[in-house]
Image (cartoon, rainbow, N blue to C red; front, side, top):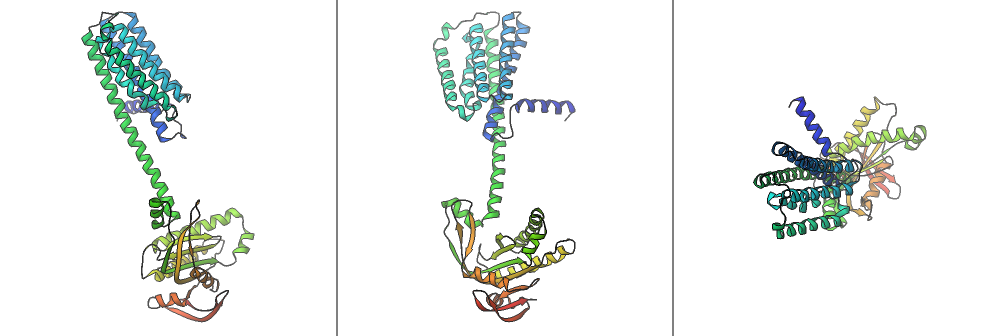
Length: 408
């Protein structure tokens, strides 16, 4: 495309976008753009008639009236630019009315200009903003009634300017009206497609955000029924992590630095969870909790959590080599039964409940930095896949003595 064509395309696009603000809704922007397009087409309509009159007649009334009406259509663009949306739509319809009535007076019913009334009937629904819906009905009904009256009294609507052949007037008016309808429908179709694409993009963003907060089965339940029933999971594994010396670290660095550090670390942890098919549940301060086996029944849920824990520790070990702040993490893994569900009616929070959660937390607290501490129930599930070191029975607060193992 040439530079001239590019500049011309940008010029028409700027005309169409006059008055469109970033904070406007997709629907309101569509109404505004159609109004601008219709206004430009109104100017073109009158400009064409000026050219035709230039070659066929010397009557100044034709030149002057079309020039005045063309300026009236341009005023709608000015009103839109000043964000007077309702006034712009009203002015567009009034300019269209005046054009038709003036042509009926000058050229008579035989000129075929009355076909423009069909366009005026539908134009309000294409241009008026939603807040002016009542005015839309009024102008559309008025145009319909005017058309009926015009048809009934067509024999009384005679020409007051007989220099133009009625046959030529019919061809010009019907052709231009058809052209305007084609352009408006084509433009509206393109704007609707663009609106749908924008809506689909926004819907995908919302879906992605929702999937980052809630599991897929919970989202499905909420969409279908608006609620979710707590579900019991008998065979799942919980992964718990915690940083040693976090309280002292909080006191030694700025809050912004702390948040940035945790965001960086937890961001990588989230990626690891996705890679190992483990579901992140929540973070509380420096604690990170995840689970495997919630979405679907699986036999390797414990092994997946172990692999995820190994990747998390490896990542921290590499990260500590190039960062000033050293993060030292304990990991606890426990398998058992939980109840999962959404708590509350607003700001949904997906959470797990049951003694398994408490035990997993105690297993983590009883562990050591840089090691994966697991319970006996988890050991029974992964003993053939990983080498483990028995720690014997270790006291856990509120749980008594529990059999624990380190994964080598």
